[in-house]
Image 1 (cartoon, rainbow, N blue to C red):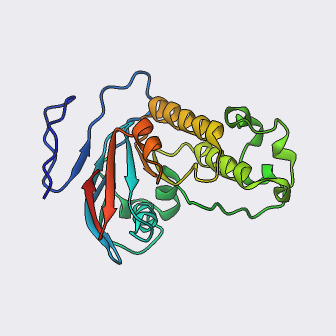
Image 2 (image 1 turned 180 degrees about the vertical axis):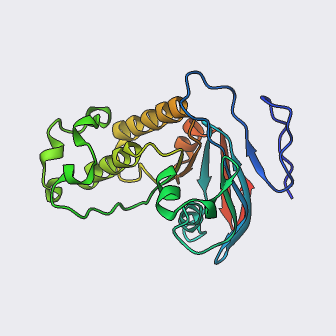
Length: 228
């Protein structure tokens, strides 16, 4: 068992075996959300205990095949799993499936696109700030076939944020992006979690990125979480 570092912003101690990322007060936050996984297990991963407080970013690292994507998909309730999931002390099973998945927003490593035109994937494309990720002003009118891999990845991030999720589960969101666009995504997510109080789990293989964005870095290996 790994001991947790004392929390610098609250006096509450985390429960045994639970990673605790405690957030300082956030100014002008719409909703403060807390996400908890208790004894979460799926296939060879877990059981895992994890607590994410409002506005905090936990970077999840680990070798390929260790189960990072499985763990995120279990948190999003997209795969059968054991254990409990709670959002603001409300258990996952008390939500309708689509309500949970709207609140707990999961970004897969490879997004899915069902329609021919970009704008058809957004409820209100005119309100999407495509300039925030250096996308063409008229991209909502483009055919999906015209979009590069990097453009699709940035669009997927904007599509996720347009739903205003209260938790972000991001599976290598910048893996296909160059340096400048990677920094734009990092800034956008940082702004979102500060403004919305949304906790973030961010899977990344980039050690330098992890140092830039993380409040805490955890490693998943052999089915268990450990401090980096």
